Length: 254
Image (tube, rainbow, N blue to C red; front, side, top):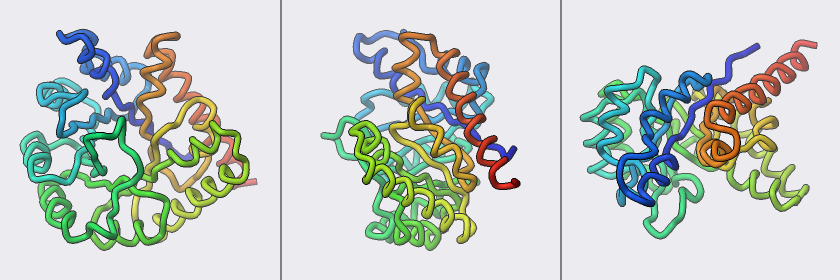
């Protein structure tokens, strides 16, 4: 079976903590539990408004966990300096608007090429693996390649929304876009990740795409942890991913 990694996003553990203040629940404790449950990496988004993950969280995650840390960040000078100071394994550049509830859509790598270039280069020189969170669109993928980012993360939100609505036409259209984008990214020599909105009911078709190397999932897992516990939620997600990829691998070798 070809490997498929799971990155667990712990942002919304911090959201719950911040709703009341104090130190509980602790995102770093959640990261340790994620590792024990089978996560391959930890993702944390340090937003400009610090609405969930804090600077202190990033300091502790950098120091206290042994899994690779993927720092989600807006392409700003402040965030670039923070990434260069902490040297996470990876940095995923995402769009950010203060009025949004969560990251909405991919970053415009094509339209913001010149703005992104300095940050991509600076992080790359520091041996931080840069990824760009983008829509499954050939123009955006080509722009990521032009910028020198070795990794792209395909936004799966529109597909998950179509699944939730029961819109079979848009479901099929969006899934085909993701599949084609993953193949195109690989053809350009990029590593392909995917994420946003994935849950138990939607992870299978994305995990089955052989060209995708990693899924980043957070909000669903933290929410499901209320009912089943974080360990059980991650283990079930890991199992569903493995099952879907194994079936895909068997079909490809049949």
